[in-house]
Image 1 (cartoon, each protein chain N blue to C red):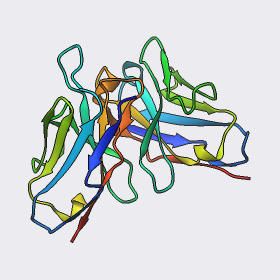
Image 2 (tube, rainbow over the protein chains, first blue to last red; image 1 turned 180 degrees about the horizontal axis):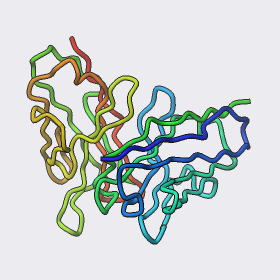
Image 3 (tube, each protein chain N blue to C red; image 1 turned 120 degrees about the vertical axis):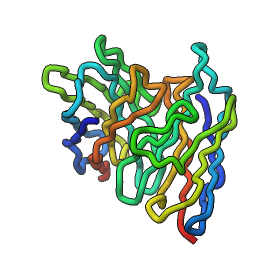
Length: 121
Length: 113
């Protein structure tokens, strides 16, 4: 089924930058689209960004477009999220998630444990 | 963006009794390929989300058969035939038909009465 392990979260001030990483194992990483989903404290799930498997096309929620960049290194089985110009409203647990089939339309079947990002002055 | 509306938002249930969660979308979720991309997730307290059902009614591997999904168009339902203690948590519907973006419902918190 596979495993995902996020890292890189932390506490930082508004306007700062952070890069999250997600190490994948137990499945052929290069075959699957990947996504980031976040959850603000006490709130629901919000899709943040997605990237296709082979050609690396990227997609973003309007709330992060122009500030966040998703990327992947298939040789390292790793997914990234570069977060710039961070705002207080970006405070959340960030989950890395594997798309279940060839299309993200079917949702995500493997999730990481999450990494916490706190933006506060 | 497609808005997903769940009801109820809080669901107290007696152990062994059935439970039902409704999810409505602001647009039909039938895609051009004929599939309907409505998925359900469970998030137990302190845990990451877990997909239970994809494409309306397909259970994921390892999901007990007391969970079932149904619906069409804009109206969908997740049913638990007999609630067990391990079912406590928050349940989310998610649409993938009109992505990007993927959108989730607000979540329904299931608790034991």
